Structure formats: C-alpha cells, structure tokens
Length: 380
Image (cartoon, rainbow, N blue to C red; front, side, top):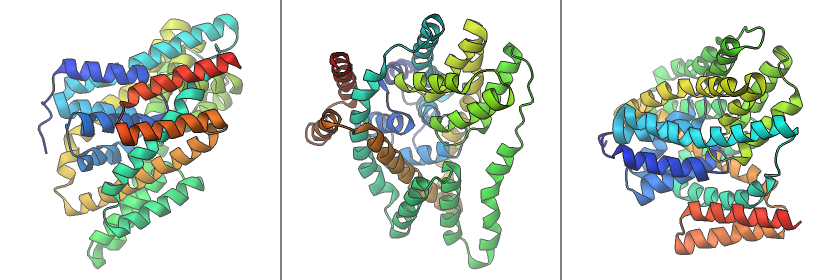
C-alpha cells in the first residue's frame, strides 16, 4: 500500500475545488468522477484499492462520496490533505446552496435552476454506467461475488436500506471465509452498526444555534445510505418532531442540494439559513459534516491494513460487490427519472460515445450537458 504523503496540498486543492464546482449528479456520480481522477488520470492507486476505500466509506454514516474524497486526501497528504479535500469539495456546494436559500427567502421560491439538472443528469447516467462496468470487473472477479452483486442489486430495487445491503453482503462473504465451527458467531456482526445508530439521541427544544448544531450533528452521525436518505431524517426531525419547518420547505431544500454540484448534504446549509440566517447556515454546515472528517481519516488510515486479514478482506470483498450493485441501482433509478424525451436520450448516448471512443474529460461533458439543459429549458 502506498504511503499517504504522495501529493502536494496544491494538487489536492485544485482537484477537489474543481470537483466541488462541477460534480453534479449525486453520490454515485461523485465517486465515479473521483475514480477517473485518482485511478485513471493520476494513478494514485489501483482500482481494487479505490474500491476498498469506497466500500469502507459506504459502511460509515454521513455523506459517502464526501468521505471518499476525504479518505483519498488522507491517503495522499495525511490529515492536512483530508482537510483540504473535504473543505474544497464541501464549500462550493454550501455557498451555492446558501445563495439559493437567500433567493428563496427573498423571493419565496427557488430560481429556475432545473435546466442544470435536465442537461447534466443524462451525462451523469452515461458516466455512472461506464464506471459500473469498470469497477464491476474488479468487484465481481469471482462468481460468488457476482451472484452477491445481483442479489444486492435486486434488494436495492426492492427498497432494502443500503446499510443493510452492505452489511449482509459483507457478512455472507465473511462467513464463507470462516471455518464451519465459527460461522454462527459471525451472524451477530450485522447488528452492531444498527445498534450504534439507534443509540443516538436528539432531544432538542426551541430553535437556536446550539439546538441547531446538535440536530445536524446527530444527522451527520446517524444517516446511513446516500444524501437522498437525508430527506426522511430531515422530515422526521425538523418537521414531525420539532416542528421547525414545513414538509414543503424540506423538499425545496433537497431540491437546492440537488441542483448544485457537490454533496447533497449541503442541504443543511439551506435549512440552517432558513432557521437562523447566516450564522445558522454556518452552524448547520459545520455540524453535519464534522463527524465525517474524523471517520474518513480512520478509513484512510486503516483501509490498507484490512487486506492483511483474511476475514476482514473477505468482508470487504462482499461490501465492495454490494457497493457496485447499489451504484447500478442508483443508475437505473436516475435513468428512469432522467431519460424522459429525445433530448435527454441523445445527451446520454452522445456522452457514452464520447467517453468510450474519445475518453473525453467527464468534467467538460457535465458542463456541456448543463449548458445545453439551460438552453433547452430557456427556449421552452
């Protein structure tokens, strides 16, 4: 395993600032873009090593793609690299979402930014599909892992929680590597993260910066899955339990997080501004992302050692197979919601051709798709 101190902070700053400004499409798309940069373009690590980081980060609560960015930063430049990668990936999304929150409060609705998604999402579908093919050849290198991947894909489409899919796949892979006499004890492993998540509490009263910090800190610790799972937690806490905002405001906040690049968890910035203004936006943003800086550092430090253990390595193989299957389920769901007419299908197909034949930089494809989407929606 390569030493983490291999890149300058300037290189990490430039890469993640660019990704933070252009990474539309949600967590799966972000991971695809990082894989292209870290594995294909820069040769920082092998595809198998990258999959190990992704699999380990998928087991953590919080924003998975942001934690992959931080873990990569740690692997390349230690804790400073982690901090720079995380900040550069998070801040553009948070500032863009803050601008939308200001406009929302001032004008009563979001600016017409749906054109960005209309053009960028078909491109992201193409990029994700290409990456699933590449990563799948590594994750499904043995037929039992391929079968596990198909089962996880089906479970995800049926609505199984992502963390349950990941843990079940990893646990079954671990059991196949255990001697028969020890397999029964392995069944208890899958309950540990759920128990830990259930132990988190959030008894908070009136709105204020301190209660706001505690609510979003709790969300950063207990939200498993992707940024889209955040919607259910936000509704349960902010609408149903605390009655701070309405369901409509939560949906508008999630929309703001989607139409901006970077992590969907930047939705917290929008909601913090609605509740407590500029200071609330800062507090909510820091609170929801703060746990990830510590957890991603542990992943970056320990991921290389996992492969030294036969049992831990088997568990990670199962998790990696599940992670690629979850990406495939996201791609299918995104495709169904995105490829709705001739223009979106054309954008997706042209993007696939450019990626496969000419290996065009994905960033330019995303920006081009977003610009075309704005033009098409503006002309409608």
